[in-house]
Image (cartoon, rainbow, N blue to C red; front, side):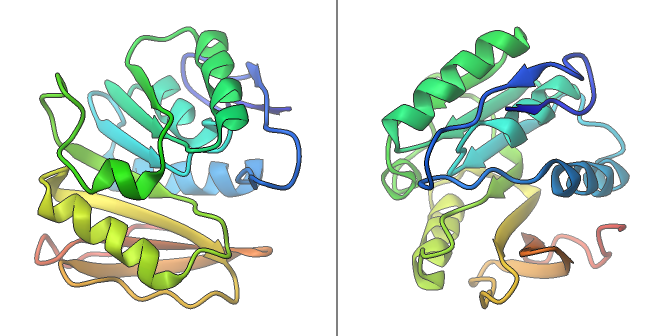
Amino acid sequence: MTRVIGGAAGGRRIGVPAGSGTRPTADRVREALFSSLESEFGSFHGLAVLDLYAGSGAIGLEALSRGAATVVLVESDRKAAEVIAANIKVVGLPGATLLTRPVEKVTAGDPPPGFDSVFDLVFADPPYKLETAELQDVLTDLVTHGWLADDAVVVVERGKREPWDWPEGFAALRDRKYGEARLWYGHRHGQGDGEVPG
């Protein structure tokens, strides 16, 4: 079990998938991530958030708890998706959509039918074994198929020793290491020059 840290659903306990197939972002990493992003956005109110390789859904549901208007969670593993569905009910807030499909198949097309917004914030926490080039292709597809706002921020979580290079269309903001994980912050290329505060 883990918990929602802040916002309307703060303190609620949410499940995590059993086994080693998923690797939930540690609470302290999630807390640092959202503190940093709140400095960037000022507020999550009204944001559209995309949580790729969602695992337990903790990142997306944290954003929903803190005021995001829309959260789309993408997870290919059916057992993990069942956990996410249960966690959505625990959080009890409107605006969450779960897609149980491989991330690369979802992002290779247009946003889901009926979704009339672009995403302001994307979080991608793939299995560490996923090749860098595969994740770069996913992010490139987000741009190609019109998923992202012009000023969208993207956060990628990788192992601390895993290499990461932003694909064309993105610019690096900064990175920060937390234990065995490293968070890489980026944004749509040409959309500002500042860093995400730490």
